[in-house]
Image 1 (tube, rainbow, N blue to C red):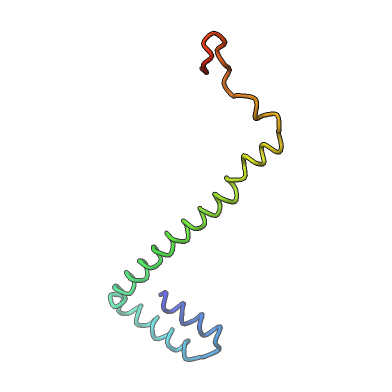
Image 2: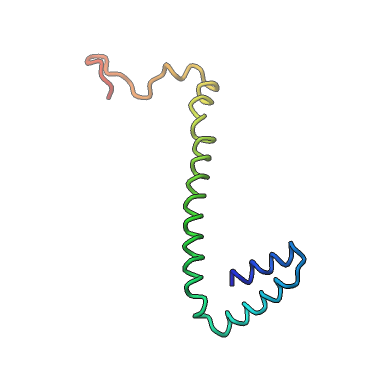
Length: 98
C-alpha cells in the first residue's frame, strides 16, 4: 500500500501518468497476492521505526534546550530576590537544614 501511495504522489507532483498506471498495477497485485509484499513491508516498517526514533530524539532534545534550559534565567529575572531565599528553613541550634 505504501508503494501505491508513493506512486500516486509522484503522479501528482511530476504530472506523469506512468506512475498512476504503476500504482494501479501495484494495488491489484497487493489485493490479490498480499504475501508478495511481506518482505518489503518488513523493510518499510523497519525504516519507519529507525526514522521515528531518530526524529523523536532530535525533537525532544530541541524542546529540552528551548523550553527547560532558560527556566532558571527567566525565573531569576522575574524574581530577583528569590535567590537568597532557601526553600527549607535552617535549624538555628545545629545550623543544618531539615
